[in-house]
Length: 249
Image (cartoon, rainbow, N blue to C red; front, side, top):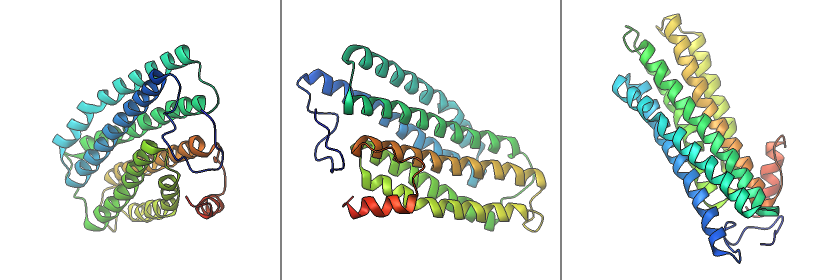
């Protein structure tokens, strides 16, 4: 397989080897990791629903399903190990395998954040505090932003799509703004009718949601690394977006 640095990937980067079995192994690995990401997305949606609806049943379901993500992570690690030992990948193939390994780790951490939200819900579900509308609306907006970014990361990984990754970067300022607005509401918890303990719980949930969005951004960086061969960590986002959009991504 030849690398085409700086060009749009016109074909599946995990296909094209003379050994067809190799293509199948790479495709299976990516499918396994995408399956893991889909489970995390479902967990995130369920955790936010439990938070907004004060639903302990939904929170328990999130915690009950958490081991599925851990098992998929172990399966992915085993697939990566076998593929490296058997095929000894080099160049772009090694880039793909290493990136998929890191993507799996990001998915696992995002799943942990969903579980953290579920734990927080169960801690205060018996309290008398009520989720007031301004806070509810702010939490919902932050959750939609973070999970939208995460779900876009799934589409980016499915095709090593640079455009989808740039869309995640473009959402980062809104994620930060919505997190700030929610934090300001929680800092004024007395005015919002929230007890300090409840406000702290919601703050932890908000932090978990923001981190889910950050995991999506980390995944987007890895997708770009695979697709065009450039490590874009620590690069100025505005310049990066403008440069790659100008190239037609």
